Image 1 (cartoon, helix red, strand yellow):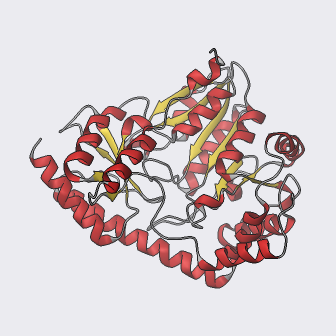
Image 2 (image 1 turned 180 degrees about the vertical axis):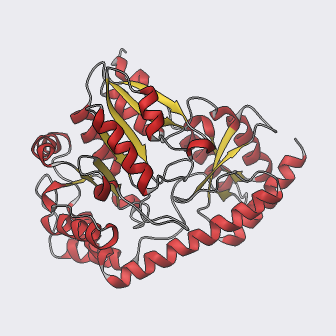
Length: 386
């Protein structure tokens, strides 16, 4: 059978294969520590579950408008005002099936065949793949500690080409957990604007930051397209709900796209998501953020003991990006052997990096402190045999 050439540009997400292997070992009776997938061990907040149940019981199962439930769009706008000092008209917010739905809409709106897109390397692979599916050519720019693992204004200026139409950022980023400061984000916005391009900012880990002031492109770059999600900070991964903040002129075509691509996001999920903005729920979510902060510090201390800690600690999300070049230049094999020999599941860097992924791995600090300490002990045993 023959399929479209577009599909050939989409690579498999290797972490899902590794997750299957880890689950198979678990089913066989092994004590596996899961540090591979981007999903903390916290359940969806009880207030959200109850709100979802009430929505179902009340018959809220019909379509909402394509752009989303008006009350939810207003709540998100208020969230930006309260936490980021950003004035966002609710009409500029499009509710989507997960952040992936928002990225799909943005990619279809902003780029077409032959356009070039700038993004950092490493980055979340689906960002690359969705742009490639839209026919864009990708210019992945290698980043490292010297730029804070981010695409900064100087890199934008250096790599911008006549056919470049879009620069994409992620702050906090996956897989490195690094962020752009207020000044850096403003500078990138200006650099893109001066070149007549679009700026797309992935903020799905927004809210999960440590030791720094949280910022949003919605406050600093009014012309930017901003993607966010209820999955990470709000703990609603399986509810599949996200949103896109867009400039006024983009709202109508985005709504048309939404009508045709997915018609509307899940109605019960939208009603349930209203509960995350209640003060009591926000207190619980803040406790979870502080717990992730502790986990990060415990993991970094353990990795420092093994002389593996990154030179620039992650300031957000729940990942540590590690250079394992002293031990291996095959991250997939490294992760496979660590799972088989010590029952610790982490993610090979080749999922995220076009260059250098073969000697990097990503560790998600999504388990409790005791399990993280045990994982470091197992990693230490494994490294001693290399």
